[in-house]
Length: 92
Image (cartoon, rainbow, N blue to C red; front, top):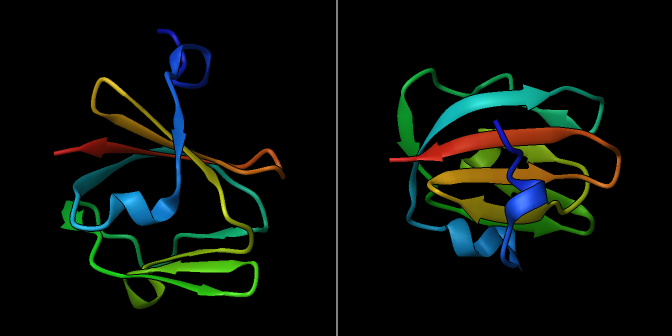
């Protein structure tokens, strides 16, 4: 299966995910991405807050130490971090 990164058309900001219904697909872990409260089912991205370099989705549902590059292809959303961490979501 081809990666999102290899076939993306353009990157977006995290704020462009507001209002989207997504489902967790997979992630490449690291110390700059916190997913402890992530639900197993689908959820809507309702809020995006920035505190310096930190980005918080849905009041702590997903916490990122750095703003990721966001790419989407075929309903698959990839959040790619400069640290090498990755988070993949499936648009519902």
